[in-house]
Image (cartoon, rainbow, N blue to C red; front, side):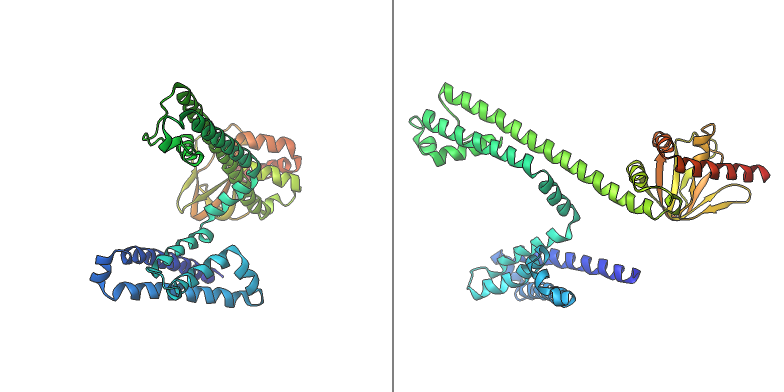
Length: 356
């Protein structure tokens, strides 16, 4: 299983490298002096890049099997198909620069980028708010163009003499681009321009706020789902109800620690406890104690005087879940079963330490 994941990552990186080489070759091929100087080299590179994309397309079709039709209709399938057939179609149609169709290869970055998937989910979630801002944008755009056409049309007929010309000015001004080559002369026209510029700032401020809020909410959702999966597989939390796991998943923070990282140090103030999801940590007592997946540590400081009683270090790369003291006390109050389990384990450790 691990070998398959490694091969998959290597294949993905190879395709990204092929994409980069292909796009650079397309760019160089568009320059006649470079094309003449390189001779057959650039066409060979371009055909090799296209062959690799075609082989990857056939591999996906073969893997899909009976579901090949569904895959071809999906976004990934459509993009990969387009990246394979665009150049041959350009050659068949006799395009002056058929390899220019190779720029469509850049679309392969869409399914390969998780962040674009996140952007798509944000746009889908915030579509109502975004459509409202878009409607406001269109209203201001059309009204400002009509007013400028009426006010400045006679004085500047080459610029504002037609509504489409005035629309161009409105787009430039509303987007705060402001080339400066077209400005109103009449006083009323300047007032309209000021209103358009301020409206543009408001519109894009609203867009920024909506998208920032959407990305923050989506990030919290993704963090919650990751924490949920981690918490669900920790045996210590098996007694928690679904609502308890949900509360805990919202409170926990994931920490991927490397080997030989000091997690807590003896004598320091303790402000959090830790649950081991994977890997292993060593508690520096006499003799040393190792805690593996499903175990936890750091609760003694939170239940006692707040001072760490031992140094804890990772013995190999580990994934830890961190529960801050404020969330710890909230969870203990809301979920007595968790509080009982933690306190029981703390008493056992205290008794074991005293016996030593």
